[in-house]
Length: 157
Image (tube, rainbow, N blue to C red; front, side):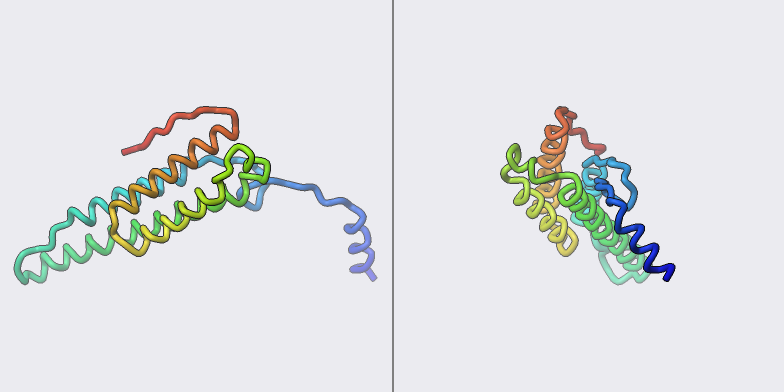
């Protein structure tokens, strides 16, 4: 009885439409977090490629090397996943169908950026990490243009 009364009551109240990147309607979006994560991917990729394995069979040196290598890989993969998450939030929550008139390549740009995040997770490939940074930069400019602003692309490194 109470359940049906509450159900009838709530069915008469119209639901308000909200727009947010999370469960709360804050409406705060910014591609900066994707940029920071993509920069970390690029940095870790460079560090991995520069890491020299020890000469010889010294177990202590190999332990240090393996630990460092593993940490760099872990950070690279975590940050690639974070970049992907942040990009997907912008793509699916911020950008709307009306943005396609201004950015006809919006879907392809985001799709390729998400694929680059995946490629950076499973490979140590400098060209892919650099492509990811370029894709995030393009998205940065699309985002700020959609807001009527021209915020500069500035990297931390």
